[in-house]
Image 1 (cartoon, rainbow, N blue to C red):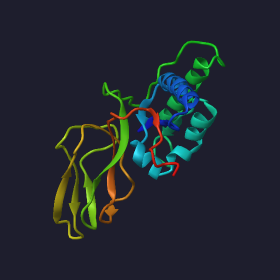
Image 2 (image 1 turned 60 degrees about the vertical axis):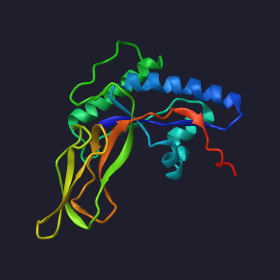
Image 3 (image 1 turned 90 degrees about the vertical axis):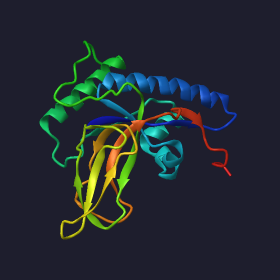
Length: 210
């Protein structure tokens, strides 16, 4: 599904100027994301966000080091984007230009794609990790809402025999399904948007600069 990624903003403990800049930039990023009009998803929890070095990605670096609000638009995972997705992305971009005062006119409605607002902030999490080398059969697809206990995938062996069903540990919605049906043990088979209880602005871990 089409959505916009929202980075977390980190600052060094005791640096009040950096904290104030991060808070201001974070508010601008929220406004810009709402102007874009697509589903809004925060990145991984802080520990994984750092482990994956996503705090060094272009958007995060621009926001944290330069104080310039920035977002990553994910316009679906297909190699050939659908026409409706392209149109929704361009409309969102024009809306951001209007928000920034660079384009005149009223905000355009985002049509042709599904926009999900579960009523609480969400972040991405890779889930449904298989326990066997297997062929996976998905019970969900991008955009589906899920509850705790809902079946996500069934693992099958090469003869089609069931190796078990993996249920959701979280409430949220499906962002995407990784391509392919053959998986190795430990591979994630679903990307979910789950409730995000972590702050979007916070300090680097205490041992980060050691």
